[in-house]
Image (cartoon, rainbow, N blue to C red):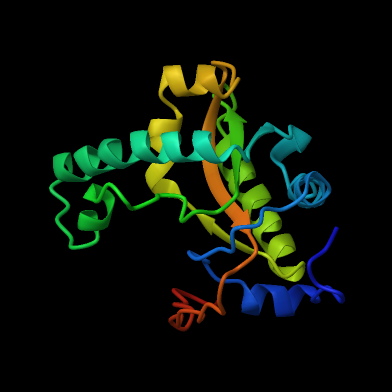
Length: 193
């Protein structure tokens, strides 16, 4: 199951978790994915609705195809929003893989009829990413792929029903190198009464 002999405690996982964008070629097992999903569904959920469902993609050719379709979609979306950045050049490169060559993509999907589904799905995503970190795995949210993954033809290809939408696409795998945590600002406290 685990890639770590001794899992981290919660605060260590919170403090050590970071977005990983470089993975080893080997993937993670079905058993490991099941453990990650079991952690995800332990997340808080509004009115105990549990509006989430999951799609797991480990087929390398399908991951490459999804990356190739998501990149131009994201670039067009950013240009339409008048967002100009050097980072967009990566997305325009034919060699760039939007999933950073990770062997596993987990899509957390939420019911479109539930107004609190997105919040619940993001809570599940954090649980999943903390569990991955505690197990010695790396993860990263790939928000730039969300719109392309929600295209009707892509959802049909991935067997995602119409009443669900992809909320949180997360790549998971064995990190290729130690990733430095990015600094965070101190909490901005607006009031304390």
